[in-house]
Image 1 (cartoon, rainbow, N blue to C red):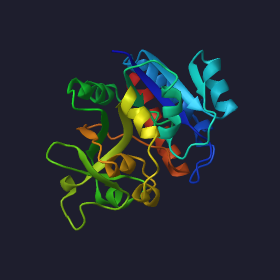
Image 2 (image 1 turned 60 degrees about the vertical axis):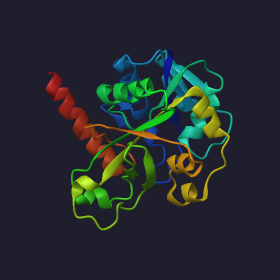
Image 3 (image 1 turned 90 degrees about the vertical axis):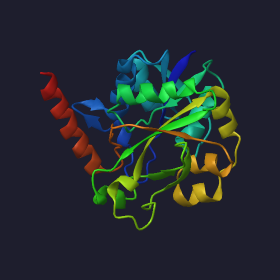
Image 4 (image 1 turned 120 degrees about the horizontal axis):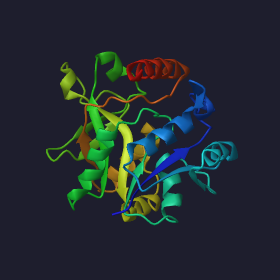
Length: 244
């Protein structure tokens, strides 16, 4: 079974423009994410998918694989779907370009979810550390059914009204798809609730398809703001000290 990673990369972030070119210890975020994906040794191939020549040049200079997106896409999943149609594989993991601290164990569990033949799409979730994180709309919440399939994603705290922190699940925006499931996703129109929440996972649910949510202790860090970049630099420094 051929498993690949596709890393969508765009520079037009409204909250933090050009963030993927910002540097952690002198290394652009997109390159650090690419290297982290390779270091897991979980993938047969790792591609960065972008319409931006500067991003692609950074990866090519590293000797990495790239795919130039020729269309304007409204989500990272739509962007990698364009590439997936042109690359042979069985399973694709959509790694976010702004999450450079990839956890091998969590990604391995995600890939292994496809040992269940009923799983066509899967993603990661973890628990929150505190209610400040829960109330932050940059942190996506997910509720699940008894089979751990996603019921809904939201930027608001769901389930509403709970005072127990363990009742809330934080969505880590890493998805995995079978090749056919990703191509089928790309053919779906953006849904109303997806547009309202700006979360493409809702499109899957609104079209009566399942997302198996895999629990992990990995917390992750998505670099959505300049403050997140400062936190990422601190984490990187701490990791370097632990290795020394």
